[in-house]
Image 1 (cartoon, rainbow, N blue to C red):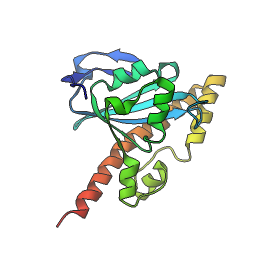
Image 2 (cartoon, rainbow, N blue to C red):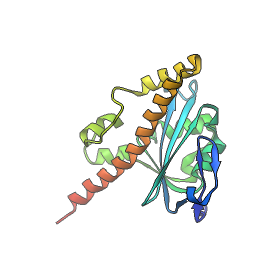
Image 3 (cartoon, rainbow, N blue to C red):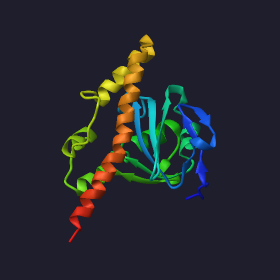
Length: 195
């Protein structure tokens, strides 16, 4: 692992903001989820890389969209991160990023796949199913990964800005809910070991 700087500038959809009031104090964790045009990294593209950067007191959302979802922008966004949290990221997000962007995030950062923590707590299914089991609220209901693909193409082909906004809101809920999932899992473990 490389040494971490004391503060971190944040990229908001590829706009670098280096003002002091836009910096997060270390340590910083990243909660990451990608949207794609399909399930096959060989044929399909990354459409959105959603990252919620969080420390003990605040969080910042970064969404790299379309042509801005590059390896350079991703590494710049993650440059002060120690641990990346995902759900099923070991099997989907990280390999997809590695194949499409040529970046093996596991070589640069610690990675924790919360799906495996869920399994250790007898919580099975996709992320939305686990959210329901743990009563994690979701504002957008009925949108799936397949619908996210449709939303992207509605934006790309028809320039439907509302479709893009809905896709970004869906991705935002995924990354922000990863924080809630991690906290609920930590509480489950603590409650199991209380005397």
